[in-house]
Image (cartoon, rainbow, N blue to C red; front, side, top):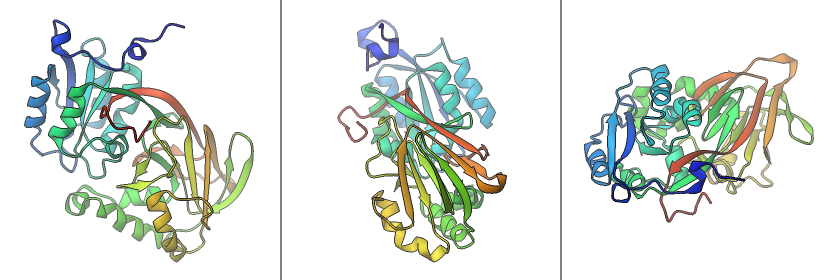
Length: 317
């Protein structure tokens, strides 16, 4: 079977290897936590490395996807500066155009960049793009929306509601901790059916999260075995009745060491469905963005997108 053009080579040619520079659409989210950081040095580094940069200003979320789709046939790569929310808003369009993605981490948590081993320093992140090493990564999908890191049913909605730009700008990753603590103290369990590829499990839970990548929530680990190209989703259900029962679970959640931990249910698979009992319609969040309501149907999209990654980083392999 013939390979697609992106599968033939894992490297985009540099200027010295062909007559024209690698054209790249650059979109920087200036509203991200570090969106006002000076990216000029990073962009200059890319220009010196053989990229012809076409920067476009986007000030509204719907325009981001439109700009990416318009770029098909005009550029050879997409470079996005922003956080995980920016990347999630772009995900559907990125899948459509199938252009290599370069990431300049400018958000608060930058969990996808952390998963991929992309450094937080913008010039160092630009060097990752300049090296032109590509890796095809999986994406998660829930109710028609793609996500990179994690989708949640339960606590995640309240956490996202309490997070705000001012808090993230002031406290950084700690803003996630403060928001999660406030929400957890008011959490009420709900009953749901978890439908896997082989069985249906009834649970009483305060949150079900389904991870595609390795990290979420500012460095929490979905599962210590998770990688972003393992062709699997990793489901974790927090099955507690009282908020204080969450406290002893925090070390396991931080490390992703979930095996045999009381009040934690961990499942792996390619597809899941979360169906609350009594037909409750609970909001679903995907990387901090609303992705409809339950019932929530999840599946993994293997090798969905080519991304520039460090050439010697095997943590996601």
